[in-house]
Length: 330
Image: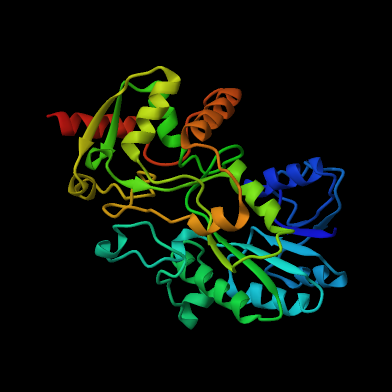
C-alpha cells in the first residue's frame, strides 16, 4: 500500500508514522523538513512547501491514501485536489472542532453532532494569510472543497483539543503541571466547564484504521472520551499524582477585567460555553475502543515524567497566576 502523509513528523502525525512503520508500512512524508527533520531516516521524504509549486511533486505518482495533517489554506488544498485527481484513492483530512459556530450558548447544551452549523468563509477570509484569526473559517472552507470533489473518497476528522505524547502546545499539560507542582490553582467558574478532547494515541489509531475502512461517512467528530469538567480533570490528575492542590475559583468577568483571555491564557476554557462533541458516529463506524479519560491522563503523566516536567510554554505564567490568586483572595 502506498501512503502519502502531508506532515507526519509533528504531533499525531509522528505517532501515526511510528504506528505504520510498526505495521510494516513505509509511508512517504511530504513536509518542509524543518520540524524533527532527523527522525524516520528509513522513510522516503519529499521536501517542499505546500504553499508553493513544491506541492506539484506529489502528483508524480499514484497514492492509495493521502493523509493531510498540515492543511491551513483553502487555495493550497484546492490545488492539491486538482493535482491528485485520478492519482489518490482516499483523502484523509484533519480538520478541527473549531469549524462549529459556537456563539449561541443556548445551542451548546448537548454534545454537538456532525450536522451542527459550521462557519462560512468569505473571499477575504479565504485569502487571509494570518493563520489564527480566520482559522475556523478556512478549515470549514477546506472541508467544503473536499466534499465538492465528488470523485475523491474523503474522510474528514474534526478533533477537539489534542493532547498526549509529542504535544507541542502544552495546552493540556498546562493543568497537569500545576496539579503536580502548585499548592493553589486558579480556575474559572468553579471548573464546571465541560469539554471533550482528543487523545493523540487514540486519534493516531483512528486515522490508521481510516486508511483501509470500507464503509464510512465523510465527516466525523474525532473526540476520544465523554465530556468531563475541568474540575474532574484536575481531580483525576491529582489522584494519580497524589497531590491535593487548592482550587481558587474566579468568575468569568474577573478574567475579562484582568485582561486574561479564554483559551489563549487559560486553556480548555472558552469563557462561558462548554465544548462538547458527540462521537457516537465514529465509535460505531470504526469499532475502536478508546482509552478511558483516566488512562489517557496517566499516559500523559508518564510522558511528561520522562521529559522531567518542563515549565509549560502555553497560557499565563505561574508568577502571573499567583498574582491573580492574591487578588481573588483579598
